[in-house]
Length: 259
Image (tube, rainbow, N blue to C red; front, side, top):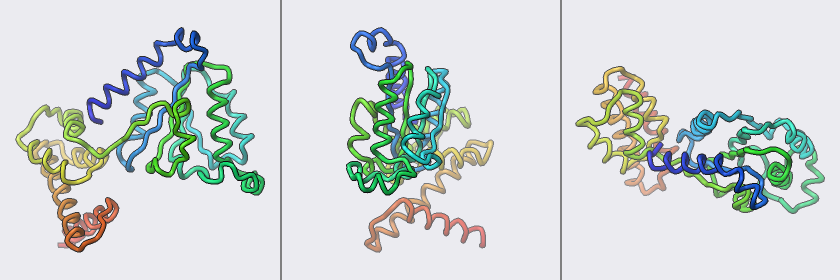
């Protein structure tokens, strides 16, 4: 994670847990909502675990697809404790995000959680008994979410989990190899501005060897393949997607192994 983003999140968490008297004075529930969004592999689940570890909060992971109705969702409220994080991952894949005001749709689909039911659940979480609670929603596609779900008071802080930045790479290099600087960092920084690489992909390359030079060479090779694949697609005049780039890189790697 980029160091500046990490600092911003920690400051927000510290401010939240230290303001019990403030929340009581203004008459608001002592709760906070976070939306984590961005491409797969950018560390959304890892951030949730880090938040819980930092605050010493429990985590409740909620799978909406396992619930039969909005009533089942509401019944979960009393089971959550203070100092807890309620997590709904891949929210755009968990429920139908349309037809919020369509009564016919709700009546025909009373065997599943609806968007309206989820909104009522979040509002109920915010107003029911209990303090010091956090709800976190994750998605790869923020633009698919209903604006009503994203407004302040439900999702108070929106956190973009982006592709790896030079700052984020340095954190990973330090974590996996104890590196603060290295002659290859300049080339890696340049490549990071030219191709999209997730923190998960970088971590995987750094873990392949205990020797820093070997691991960094592998990372450079991966990014050059991604850049080459992206350039090839641009030459063909196609709109380049990360999925297309990854497929071409995988095919190239398989060809190298066969040779």
